[in-house]
Length: 144
Image (cartoon, rainbow, N blue to C red):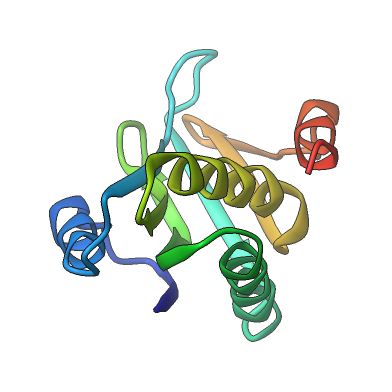
């Protein structure tokens, strides 16, 4: 089971985790990304390329299913404006054993950061600036 969604609506963690647990897994791993404050950041805005972004996320989910013995993968990403403390992304993986679930979850978030076409803008009050790709994200993705 693969579930991929790009939506401005808030991510409901309990519902998403419950759906993965229903797969009969021995282990469910997840990552939740949250808008962090600090450095004057008041909000984050994400844009994407419709169709292309969904395809990229589906491809990553399929690759994870092929590489590890997974019972389920969920990749949810929000778009639009989000305030500090709001959830941006949820990655969930279910497997018979924890190692597969944990490895696949790490793979998905590392690769999502470099392989999915999202554009991020940080807001500091009324001023906004686009965020450049980070070398550390490329390094994390290259280990896979």
